[in-house]
Amino acid sequence: MSRAYRIEVSETLHRVIKAEDCVSTQLELLGLLPREQMQGLLAAELERRGFQQEDGVLVKRQGTIAITIDPVSGTVTASNEEECALERKRKKAGHAYNDTGPSRDDAERKLRDELQQELESEVEDCNQKLQQKVTETLEKALAGAREEIDQVVNRVTADALKIKAGQMGHIKSLSEDAETGSLTIVVEV
Amino acid sequence: MKVVSKTEGRLLALLQGIVSRAVIGQLLPLATAKEPGFTGFSGDGLALIADTLRVGMVSLLAREGGWRSGRQIRGEAVVSGRLWQRDAPRDLGIAFGPQTLAFLTWLAGGRPNDGGRPLQLELGQLTIGDKLLLFLTYEAFRETDVGQSLAGRMPFYKHELIWLFYPDDLAPSKYEPVLDFTPWVTSPGSLVIEVWEDRLARRWAEVEAEKPGIRLPASMRELCTAQQRILSAWLDAAEQYGRRDLARWYLRTLSHVATADAKSTDWTGNLHTNNLRLAERTELYQLALVLMQHADRLAAWEIAARGVGYFDEGYETSKLWKADWSRYEGDQLVARARELLRAATPLSSDTIREINS
Image 1 (cartoon, one colour):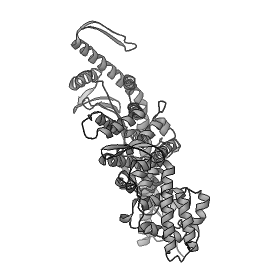
Image 2: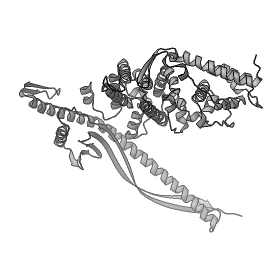
Image 3: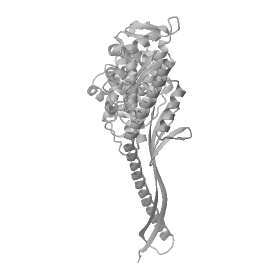
Image 4: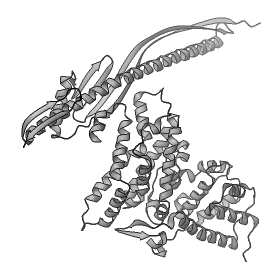
């Protein structure tokens, strides 16, 4: 008469899962001054706003969100990256029809494979949840990033206009409305 | 009086129906009738096939746009008039070869929707006439299982004209064609494109109109990747052979879809993108606007055309391009295309749009 022997396997999993997301666009500044001068104004304004120089680009970080602007190419990138250390220890029980021997080994191997698949499935679930969180966090940060980019463009354009006006003649008056962002320059040529 | 067999009679009726655009209800029974044992065409049968193609194709091309007076490029010159007025008769010939007979012989066996019946044609020997017949046959049956079966066979899924007119049909096949449009931007194939310019513009507008109904990102990606490949290859060929007039259909399509009130979400509003990363979503939105992506290339042609002087080579052809550009308000189209692409980026700056408007 055959008997069923209970077998048990256990697996431990240590994994670091990472998720990242990013969007990019091109910053298009009006060519009011020569390109290098416009790039210089842009870099200066970004530094004034707390962007740091890192390998030729300017970066501002808020938590896991990073806004990166390349003043030469005008590429703006908003990115988010998070990682999470996973540790799982699981056991799985099954049955074999022999206490020892190849059939028991097969049963154990099969059980272990199933357990590993379950663990991988858990890792995949965690991966998806982390990715969703990273994407949602980035989406929420985009409105603020857009606003900051708009303010940078406005400021750099205003500065460039002032310099250009000064090159054209004598600036008689200059008024700026901080609320509306409008700029009025009277130049005597 | 000519005498043909029953099978030849059926084939002639089918051929006549294809070139005269008969309704599918008349064509299907002729195409799917089971008549095994066809041994070949008789002399009378061949003569009638030749007559049907000769008269039928001329009538079709005349009816479907050849009658319209238009302006087209011929070398360094621009010619105008109806299709048969723009060229000498000797330059208007579209030849059919042995592959047409091989195709008709295959059709004689009936059951073209039977995937198990191989269709063996010599691809390298297909003339423009042969390709045109294959295209018309596909077009006649494309909304039936016969059409679906044809789309899965060589040479149909490699047929450049089918890709050009029906990228939405072939894109799901996942076959990545190497598209060489040389036969269709050079004579005599270019005559067909001249005739069908209006149809082609409408067809591509229809494909754009289908996009709001696409929900699956994979489907959108398939379709738009195919469109990307087709547009690049077509504009390359048109430019290489000095036939920018054959890109007019694209300008017309743009004028139809890049309207003043168009929004980028018109193309992508129903896409299920919740499970996609923002980077993937942005890439998909940009891809959905594939038609807008090539507008800058046409703008470059316009700038080049404006730089051609009265005494320079290519003056007449440049004048034609500038006239077309002006007629379809090309500068505004390009501005709208760029704006649509910019709006499809989540990080786009509102300020930039205001400054440039």
